[in-house]
Length: 136
Image (cartoon, rainbow, N blue to C red):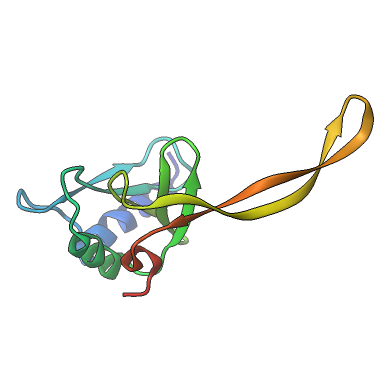
């Protein structure tokens, strides 16, 4: 492990403490830190499955700051903030956001009987409460 990686890990821990993300027994979220498998430390904030209150998400969004939506085809959508030292992910409970088709796009695909064939593919978008869209 390089010195900068250790420093990045310390920066991640400082971020958690400075942003008041250290959960207590009463909080409806938990935090996991991965400092072994990524090029940067990864902070994952998970909202508990039995929580459907948007106030938890609102509080976490305000504490973490600006985030981008990421479509994970295996586990749904999460929000992510990348910075120089570490990555922060916010994982809402299952069903908080819905993936809906918003249109189609034309794409060229390889075809065994021709160089390419033109097909229409669906375009999807995650629809989430305003608190996850950054509107609150």
